Length: 522
Image (cartoon, rainbow, N blue to C red):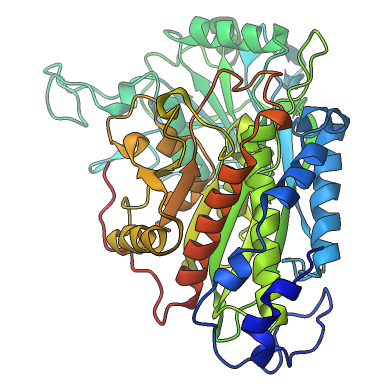
């Protein structure tokens, strides 16, 4: 990769460490961290950023759409570069790839047998998730409510059973509602919240199947079911591996055949009706991956600074135009590769950081921050409790219209949301090394763009981890085929990447970890 002859004079006293292998996790002959990290920051150059990006955002990568061949090429490019730099993979099994199982939700398929009668999905009943099981009886649980001293489950054991619930809530003789004690309905009558609340309660009781009768809203669910059945535009989601009970909504016709007295019956009990649920998933699986590498710290290796960017983009338009995504987020991706190389050269000369640096390239950002969500919520390779900060990079290669003629800037978002200490550190590092204009326009709580919630750092925010989001703004080529590598300002990309390197260096080498000292706003 880089020729480092020009920094030898600053480092020769520390050059007694041996060559590292890809699998090596700790440094040898570590002494103390170099006082001035500029010797390593200067290895981040616009020349190499440009070399990377002209490959990464080329037509060969087909717009890097999540789960598509172009995204696989992007993953391989990152993996190959970390191997070449001899930066170890993050996973214990020696892999750089964190599998992220995704799927396009489709309506399920199947039927229900009640005795000798078969009921058709989409006509006699509705459900949006698979559900299976053979049952000798149905346990009727009334409204399926447990709240404020009232319980429809009192005296019932529904573990492993199929239960039947109706919508609504109990009413006193004077017309007031039992749960609220007034004329005001409770959440159990909310058409949006009540079904989920009932299902969650039933699952907590161990129910294996949940039948739900809601005649007032069945038509609304039916319209949504039909829309999903005909639509080819379902939203990509993280695949959920669960065998929990699904909510099965019964039509008037089906309930009349199974339990015609449901409306007037308030007492819970057994219905002598055998039933077999044969509903299978019809979701379309999508295979995708995060790419994760790590440089272990020498003093506090079990504390982690995560640097992140998303490796995907939006692929190819219907007319065949490729959305190369040079800025979004090719700029952040190649900046990470250069930052990683700077840290690796520091480690190779006896200046490994005190804390571990994690290089997290996430998939599925364009589909809803899915790769970062999977990392934080499903499979954090390194404990979130030991994650000191996240520095997220998303689009730092262009100049937005606001800064034409005043190009020496970067937007910072979120630096003060959880940690005033992190914000102050960021300001000090910029003043010392970079002197960029730190623009906090999009950090405003009232920002209508809501960028704070729209990139991968936010999944770390939700876990109370301090973050900084680096961003240079949108432009006319945002999510368009015109976002190409020839329009990147590589000198600015270099400056911004060096700022992020210096900030990560300072966070990683502090004596004490960054403190969470701000109560997050609601």
